[in-house]
Image (cartoon, rainbow, N blue to C red; front, side, top):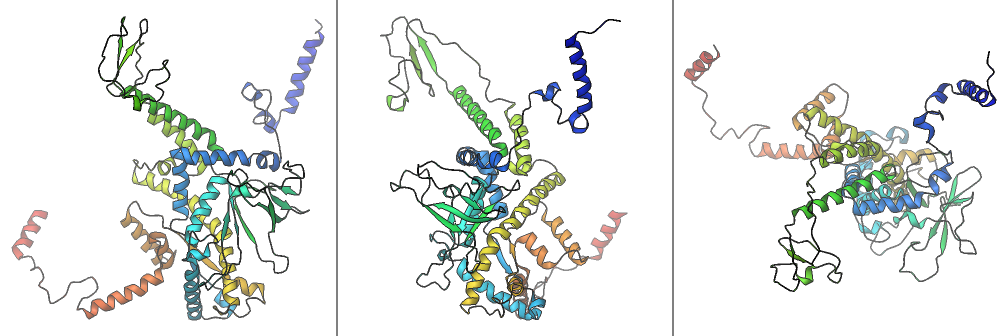
Length: 526
């Protein structure tokens, strides 16, 4: 029996130890010995290391993609348009049973509140900067959140001449929420202020630090200053600032742009597209190069005009143009190449990458590219998958942005006596009952309207849905408003001598088909 040397014994011992340790996930995703996983080095960090220290770079690159990548800009705008559209509309739904109202009284109260809110929301006076109305501010806030990862809104009280209400919305870009500099002018990052968000001992947000101008702006010569704004008022508990963001990790304080997981893919795809486009353009130029032993001889024919040349001062470059003729110096020659443009594999490759990008953004690539060439079922399935995400983000926007602003406005309306709400300021449950509301947005749309309408009718008849819900989802309108208009229309039709769905009886109608025609039709059936 041969005795093993020391290195061999250590290897055998190591293998036995590995077999003991590599159990469960250790034999699969957590294995560090497999060749396919040996180079995979991932560090486990907190939300501060993984997210907070990287948000500035992610925000900058996301905005650059929005400004320079058609696919990135199209994706963000498509989500904005489908989620917000022309703006989420208020549908006041007070809890009339808790408030002791009848259904009719609740309807009357809701109509009055919606009328008052419309007066405030339709005007640019609701905007602190007097640039947008409430619905346009929704679009701006949501798009800014998609692009930057989060957006903030102050709710100042600003009196204005001719305005009934004084509540205003002041949107603040994500960059301005920043950690103040210390006495040495170096931005600090501690356990109490994280990227401008100040937290207490239990991690609750207590204040935000707002830079008075954009940190990277070159148009402000005054030194940067920060203002500390409490999240909730000390006396009233009023919400002073709204932070619109989507959390990925516990203890996360700042949001991540929605494009973050696909930034690299979008940038590489944009570069590839630009390269293919340039190659196709170069291939489309018909340029003649003339090699001559006598460079002083000429002329060579049409060339690129001096005012059209990009770098006419550089003698070491040759510029291409449509139908141009370029003379070469003695000893110079052109090596012909065939770029084979356009590339036949370009569309298939781009579509493949777009499928992966769409998966990360929760947008099927058919919706992402606006390219519906499959069957009706496949196209409808893609739209339904996209609308799951749209509805989720719409509910999130309504809960975190629209509803808090509506509650602040309603508090002012009740305080000023414009809206009657007994017990509003006395009982938190009463206040919640008064503030209950729904926010409706653009409808999903239909690939086949007839099928969608038939399905809606069956859901209503079967008791699975209501006319109000189906009207909102199919057309984005309000059933009660439609019903009142239809009653008026039918009344006018009756007064005009028309019946519903029938022409005026005084007008001549087509004569009935003759028996001979009926017999001929029967014969053809036989």
